[in-house]
Length: 584
Image (cartoon, rainbow, N blue to C red; front, side, top):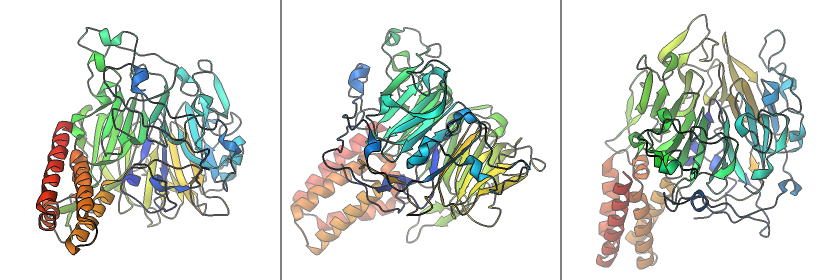
């Protein structure tokens, strides 16, 4: 279903999804901004692009048949009238920063004071200054940003083509340059891995480029790998310097977020499921014939996933109810437990306390805000979680104070440890680099971890988004004048989230009960929407804490619908349940 995005900044269920990684570490938005409903300046009808979803029609088809490209749009979006530009800050290793030179920069002054006294040095004055930046991502090798027109700019060391496959191997790109091979795709989010990059387009497709040695690009390989007779896929190795190509997500799937780690990629879909590709510890075992293809992890199937974070060797996903699952390498107890050394399947993270509160008007239980997770970030050897109450839960290595606790007080934490806002405020989001973490609070101030704790680095700037990865960091702040919004200059292709579907069904049942509207058309629409809910178990699991809530809705349908309408509903329920069971 294609709709035009509104200018509303209210938070929807899918807007909770965070695109993050620590070798990448993507970007996180301020909580007042819904990523799925960013303020939009629509294209003129004559120049708007009709895009298609990348889908895989047949698992045995060639890559050309598996990926459907977007239709060509204007090559030069910068000709459009720009909006009031946001302000971009970038610091760390110079070659990976968004400045026009290779000079290393720090947000703190020479005395080590990090109270924002040297933010002028980090303020970007490159060619990007004239553009309104919508999304940012950075890693230890390269950085990527996206403008309000959906164009992509890249900078850094071109390891295995992660910056631009058309450049020479290990070439240094000192100035942000337009990625021309992706100029026909309107991008809304980006993520940087160690030697590969991923971009989420406005129509829910994912484009990846760079190294595919571990299958992290999610591309179908047509070099004879499908004919490999070995029972192990661990010895297989894909090509490097791959050009931007659509990832084969599978028939009917669209992405809502993407996160790149070291040699793997995680994709969150609009149906609240997770696809993984790349190294087997994160993406799971693959038969040689399926090597490198994105697949779901059996442990997570059916869970309503709304957030994803990718680190160097471990990853975290978040459910709609606030539970965090972690898996991968457990270096320095970054998975929130002392052992084992590796977690081959996702496990729920052990929270400091297990508080539950009754859901109003039902017998169900929900997690208390003090321990319910709303955001996560994974670093090299540490994990940062933000709860709905605005405090931090942290674990892993603290050798540089990256947990937000002074190094003199804690060497590392083998379990989740609470950390409060220094001034009593509430944190909203977090990003994690190799030896530090970046934090955004509800006041729009940006904080950074140091060896002495957490210190404010940008205050009064109305920060909108943050990114960290490797030894680099970046922040988007609001324009000095104008609305505090991230504005894109094109329309978005959106899908209904489960909450809106249930609200619509509830409203139509109310019309049936009161005798308003056309009985036949209302019954048919209820059947269609009910089938969609039942077809995706994660949808139902995100909505109903107590199954009695679902029973109540069906009882209302029984009373309101005629016999003929009930037969249509029964057929829809059967189709939906069969589809849901097949997916499990």
